[in-house]
Length: 275
Image (tube, rainbow, N blue to C red):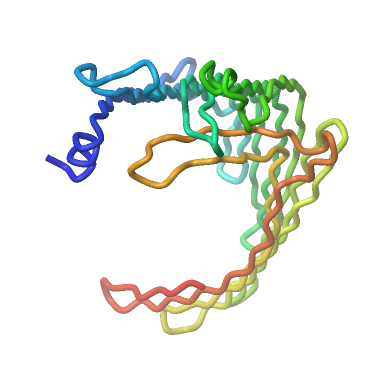
């Protein structure tokens, strides 16, 4: 019996889940097509022998379906396209939340089309590029449960539905010269009311003794925020807010990063360190 099973048993909680994953490669007319599917469903409920109407129940699920194919392939270049649908749902009742119990009906769905390309010019120059368009549908319904409504709940109800289109594109150029590799690129994402620019660059110096050192820096951004109020064990309860950036003064979620790494290879062994 796992530690999680023991804790759940002590709290008189039942937890069950199911996961499904499939990946199919289809080569029609010599053009490879990859179809991927992932589905998961989780359920947490009180033990039926001791359950009461006030006990919390949580259900959440994920579905991802994607298709990817090469549009063009050559020794020095290639272009591929993909379409993906993803959905995350939360349906929970009487979840503890900041002095109240809340009912949650959350739904986040996206439909994305993307094109990616790459190529090389001689042995010293390489490039990558791509673009995407996404339709994002966010629905948050979080409200105090009936018992707390009657008692004067302290949690303010949330009921918002946001649907919008997001577009983005990126490009990167890489140059190899002697023992040095330099890459620089930028990604731009846009939705109504907001545009974010995400530059990135790296430089790698390779020595003559099977070793290298690399320095990289950049910015990553996301056009929506996830605000999660997960609770520490053994209180298995959480809910999420998904807030679109550029609306009601909400900024984009951004992260600036800087890293340095080094590696040395000796025979079959490699020692690597990153900060």
